[in-house]
Amino acid sequence: MLHELEAKRGKAERDVAWRVLEWANKRGDLRLWFGSGQKDGSFQAGLDDASGYLFPFALYTYGRVEIQFQWMLRRAPFDAPERRVELQRKLNTIPGVEIPDGGLDRRPSIPLEALTNENAVEAFLATMDWTFEQARAAGRADRQAAE
Image (tube, rainbow, N blue to C red; front, side, top):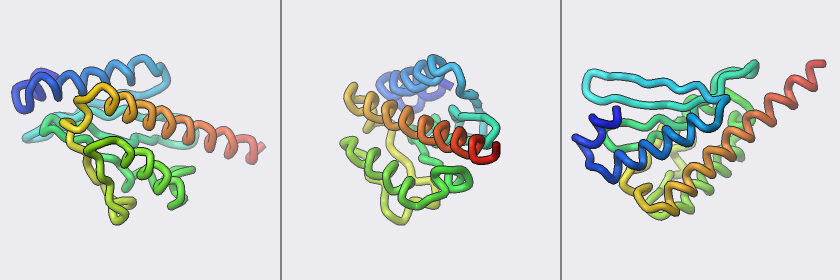
C-alpha cells in the first residue's frame, strides 16, 4: 500500500500514511485491516471489542482519509449526534480539514496533503486517540450497566 501511495501521490503523502500505520501498530489493541480494491488500496485501524467494531477512518491510496461517520453512528458513543459533532470540531481545527455539517452520517474525506505538516498529522492522531478512548469508555460503561 505504501509503495502504491508513493507512486500515485508522492513521498510526503506516503510518509503521512506510514506515520498513521506506525501509530496504529503502537496502540496494541487496534485491529489493522488492509484492502485492495480494483483501483485503490486502503488501510483501516479499528477497535474490535465486546461492544463491536469501530473504525473511525480509512486511508486510501488515492490520497484521502475518509472519516467513517456512516459506520460510527452504529456504536456508542458516536450513535449520539453531539459526539459526532465533537469529533467534527476536533478534526476541523486541523488546517486544510473541513468536515461539513451534512457529513456527520456519511464518509467525508480529508486530503492526505492536509496532514503532511507535522502539527497536522499529530493533531489528527491525537483526535483518533480521543475517538478510540471515547469508544472504550462507552464500552466499559455498557458492561458495567449490564452487570
